[in-house]
Structure formats: structure tokens, C-alpha cells
Image 1 (cartoon, one colour):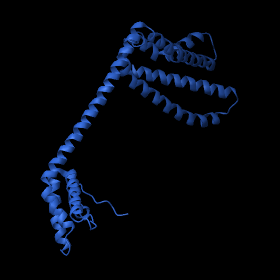
Image 2 (tube, rainbow, N blue to C red):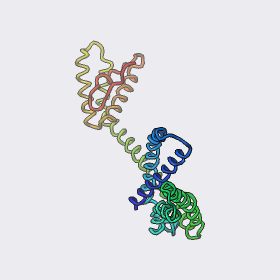
Image 3 (tube, one colour):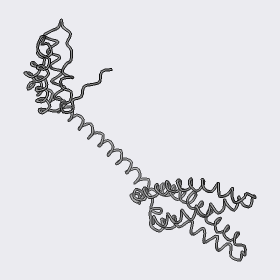
Length: 264
């Protein structure tokens, strides 16, 4: 079905292109002008046809799910009729041009039959039939049920996401309480390192790095952040009259996923 639809669409485009070229030639446009215009036109038509076919192919599977709402247009017989519309139009044009001796007029008649039939089926008949199908009692009932089910499914997905988010938040709170108890001694050591004056900075950094590595192994980046906040908070509580500089961020730079923010 997809191959037939692609072939019929290409045939329709060729027919329209032939009609345009014939109209330009009848208007006295030279061939070199026609060829120069046809190059850009062919590219545009190729893009549009590709997008159209992609939309059709992607919509085939979804349209098959609505057979109760579209009892006629979802059948294979209607699908064959729909995709074969350009070929049926060319056949009608061929029958209408029997007895014509001019090849150009003969081809033009076939192209006009293709254009007329395709426009009639794709643009007028198909939307009208689809609208009439939706007015049937069974179709309206099924559509109403489908919309209600879709709304319920959407609400369920939203509820599931909220439940998952609440579980994640609850787990983070639980981990935070656990870390506050486990990391209390390490936080006090870090707080002491922040306020140590007169000690070798390299020794302070080595000890802080060791504490940071243990925190990373315990709970990753979240654990390190919690330990840093606890250490700074303890330092401020014990030394309220002293400005506390956050050396921890620089000491821990490169441990696990810990990265120090660049100084502006």
C-alpha cells in the first residue's frame, strides 16, 4: 500500500508538472526559462512530497486503531481507492481523450484527469466521508469513550510521575537524616580544618581530601554536599565572630564528580 501510494503521488506530481510546463510553453516562455525554473520547483516539490509521504506512513498505524469511528475509510478497499486516485484519474483522462490525434493534447488530457480526480478524492470526498462517519452514533460513542480513556490515562501518568517524585524526595530526606548522623564526626573535623590557623596548608588539604574521598564513597556527590554544608554550619556556630572561608570546595576539586565553580 505504501509503494502504491508513493507511486501514485509521484505520478500526480509529474502530471501537475507537465500541465505547468505546457501552460508556460503556450504562454510563449522559452525552454531555457522553463528549465531554470523547473530545477528549483523540483526541489521544493520533492521536499513537500517527502513530508507528505512521511506523514501518511506515520499515520497509517494510528488510523487503523479507529476502525469503529471510521467504518468505511479504515477498510482496505477504501484505502486502495484513495491511494489509486491519481491512476484512476489518468485512466479517466485517457478514455476522455480517445480520438485525439495530437500527442500534446492527449498527454494534457491525461494530466488534467489525474489532477481533477486526485483533487476531488483527496481534498473533497475523503474529508466529507470522514466527517459523515464521525456523525454516526457508534462513532460518536466510541470517540467519547476513547477521549475519556485518554484523559484517564493522562491523569494516571501524571499521578505516577508525582508519586515517583515524592518517593525520590522522601528518599533524599531519609538519606539526608542518615548522613547527618553518620557524617557528624567528619563534619566536625572539617569544621576544625576550616578554622585552623598556623598549620601547614598542605597537611590541611591532605586531611580534607581524605574526608572527601570517604564521603564520595559513602554517598556520592549528594553526600559530599551535605558534609560540606554541615562543616560550614558548625564552623559558623563555633566562630560567630570570624569570617569562614569555604576552602572545602577547593580542597575537594576533582574528587568524583565534585567540581569547583570558576572564579569570575
